[in-house]
Amino acid sequence: QVQLVESGGGLVQPGGSLRLSCAASGSTFRFFNMGWYRQAPGKQRELVARITSGGSKNYADSVKGRFTISRDNAKNTVYLRMNSLKPEDTAAYYCNARVTSDFSAEFGSWGQGTQVTVSS
Image (cartoon, rainbow, N blue to C red; front, side, top):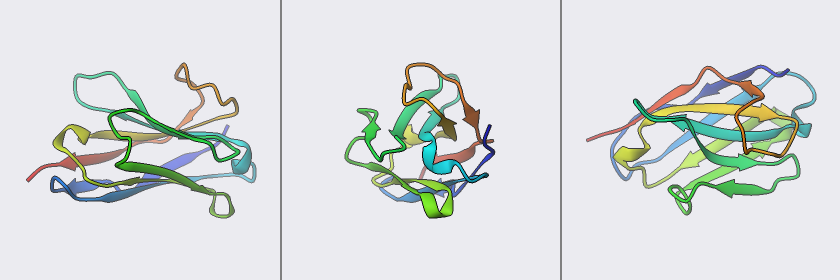
């Protein structure tokens, strides 16, 4: 089990940028596969981006070219850089950690979420 704390959300205008951070507890962060999910009101939670312990990255089609996931194992932190934000990116964003690199189902450790609102 790993404890996760997200930060960096807020209100931003369309076209703006934000960087979310997810700080993990413990000394085994480097072995975890990390993901960013989001959930908009009335919608199912969806996987936005993921990065394996080896550094391989994948993105949802809706954010490709706009979002970048990265990790700093020395700081036990995973980031989500979000550029060219759109109103449809508005959601609560959650960090997820798991031992397996299989992201076909929702499980593992979760943070409390951070709200991102894109509005003029």
